[in-house]
Image (cartoon, rainbow, N blue to C red; front, side, top):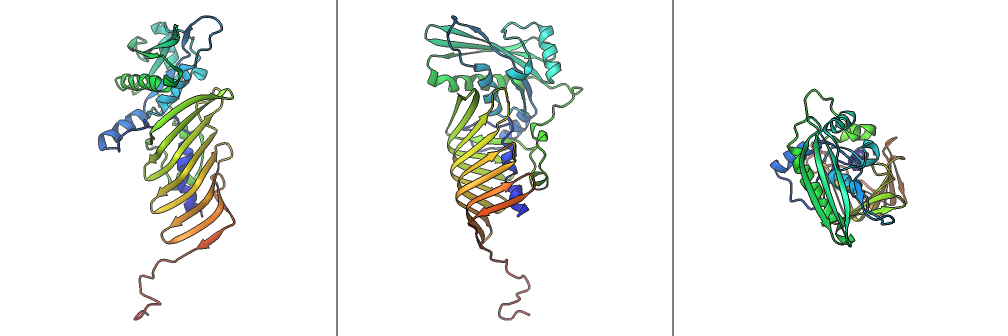
Length: 331
């Protein structure tokens, strides 16, 4: 059953912030190259300065921006909780260089959130790690709360364009890929997690839940990395407070994972990152050619490489014997 476990190495990769933009067209050669370039980018996002009357609840646009940069393929993101930068839109060049060197990033994003009547204005600055100077300034106006994600997504696209102009110095040590923090013998053998990840969906929502954050991709969700494809109607990622990696991933509705002719299907799949446990329930089925394993729930332990099937039924059809044994005229 270990061959089935390698198929689900993708769920470990989804713990990364390195994701391509939602809603993108089918990847072409140029898009694949751009995704690879984005995966090498390293950026730090500082807490935003707030200009609003006392008592006004101001959304955490800095953290949302960091999350959305992740959905656009940025491979290494140091968020507001880890960067240790002052909440200021005016950072001098020396401070910017120091922050970038300590975080091992190519650029630092600072910003300010200003309340203007009933709306918020968010302006951010991208600072170069080499010079500490402003590369560019980007502004988003958010008139209503239901436009928050789309407005900040626009900022993320602009910041990413600016980051592409920053060449990472060759003498700076490469930041470790987030996937290296999770050791999985199964995925190491059957799955290359170094490739860029693409998540496509009709919509993306972000919200604060119990002090943490939740990203929800919905509508024709497709996740692709190398030769593995996951499709579902909905994908939810829950991040605890201050963390840049989700503790739980939930795929719902017509969940399907395909790799190299092998396929797994179920109604819903839940991945608990700490336990390295993926549980697929509801019409759960594994397919390998014409062979089938079905059950109420199928549990994959990606740590010890075991599979447990609840209420299992097995239909195994061996491949045809190439020599023709058992057939008329065979020997």
